[in-house]
Image 1: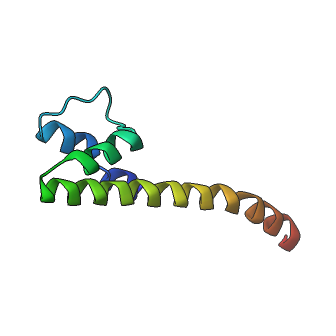
Image 2: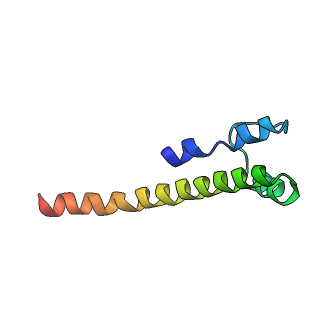
Length: 78
C-alpha cells in the first residue's frame, strides 16, 4: 500500500498543467510524457512514480500468491 501512496503521478501532471482524467494515470501516458518532456527533473519524478507503481503491482501479486500457501500451512500445522 505504501508504494501506491508514493506514486503521485497525477499530482506531477497537474503541477506541470497537464490535465488528467483521474488520479490513476495510465502507464502509457506516463511513458509518453517521459519520452516527450524536456524537463529533466520532471522525467526523474515520473520514472520514480513508474517504479513505485511497478513495485506496488509486484507486491500485490506476491500477496495473492501467498494466500494459498498460508491456507495450506495453517491446515497442515493445526
